[in-house]
Image 1 (cartoon, one colour):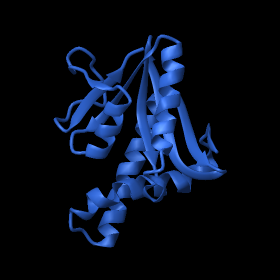
Image 2: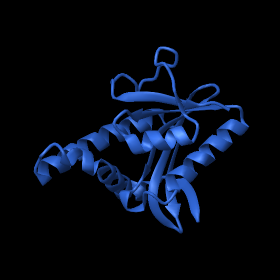
Image 3: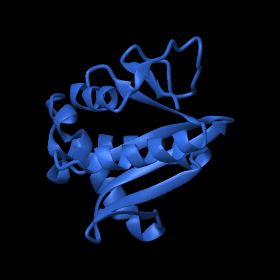
Image 4: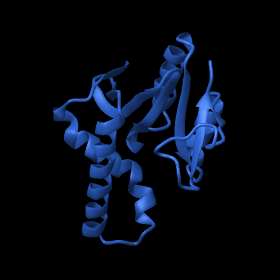
Length: 162
């Protein structure tokens, strides 16, 4: 059974490990040794957590049958829009519909309230982009909908309107 619960300080190690696991393939391509890779991921994770602390409205751990397998971080920075800042499922649990179910719930709740859902995806993240397209997300012109997380040509802003 899929559940979401508020992230707590007890989840710190899980959240850090989830971040490292979801970036492992990307970072492996850098050719760094284990110590350099670990230091890089710690720094990136710390910066990301600081950004979430400043902007997130909701931060939840995704559990399947009581086991933490992912995370959902959202923000409501403007009226009528829910921003998905992070949706992650541990690679050991991907491909089982967990991420799809989490996002369908976000979309259902938002759309019932007449709210648009926005998120960013790296253009190189083909699997995530395909998932978002299946769920009805479409690209948005960044000039039309600026975001503090936008700014790199690798990011594409997507939205799903009610």
